[in-house]
Length: 321
Ligand code: HSE
Image 1 (cartoon, rainbow, N blue to C red):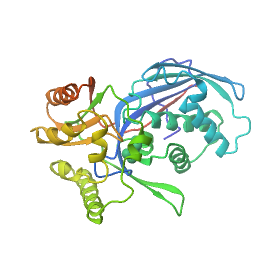
Image 2 (cartoon, protein in one colour):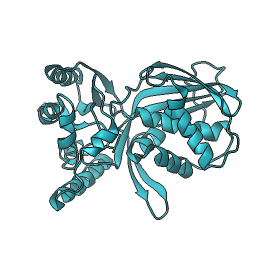
Image 3 (cartoon, protein in one colour):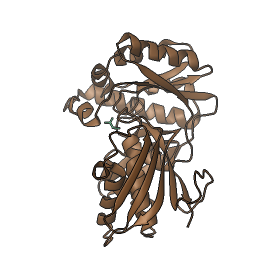
Image 4 (cartoon, rainbow, N blue to C red):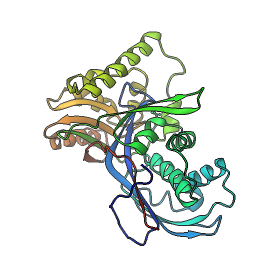
């Protein structure tokens, strides 16, 4: 995949360009294991190679304020971490342009886009020829959430599992959603840090709740693999995290409770650790998207929405040198 060239060229003078998709992790029952990539992208262009240790970055779009400082830029820190783990001496610096469409700190995998891109640039710029399993291992090690990085890298809907013995990420890519099914992502103007959203989860859960999630996640994967979209609502039901996290932001509990009852809604979930809420719909998505945003407004927070498709291809790489 890494050697393929694709034509999304923004500026043919860029040395390397990556088009990296947003993701929704968990999908309800699949906590820390399931994730889906969307056709909403951050684009990262390498304009120039610089001397080791020298980095420049220009950011536009989402997260512009947060990402202006090079030393806090997650793409650059991931690049340096991957270079160091792969024993690259004097890793080259670069001039980076980030054009970000993925909302920042909203549960749509913006940090995964940066980590995936940083690791891929480490491989490309330093001509390391790293294998795909090792790239994924490195991305998982740095980001910590395979349910974001795996679909971000390979695309589609992905079930992934860290194998502690082999120290690799095992994954299976399921078929993308059919074209007539859409994903609404309703994004409130409210940030949730994943770290905080993990701290509020209980340290142990009743055995029956663990069994509930295992059976529902298994049903979800089987339904997805066989096109039984009528089972998504049941399959995405969860008892491990959503009830706790939906309290962290206004409107979360109401959207989880109400939206699934609408005729065209196949399932609803918190995207990653929130606060974005996703709904999978068949048919007209606009009315339901407006209703989700109306619930955010009633909770006192403004919001916007995207109507998205599943991105089947993951990262798109362009090499111009
Ligand atoms: N599975 C992770 C979580 C994803 O829900 O905490 C974080 O984006």
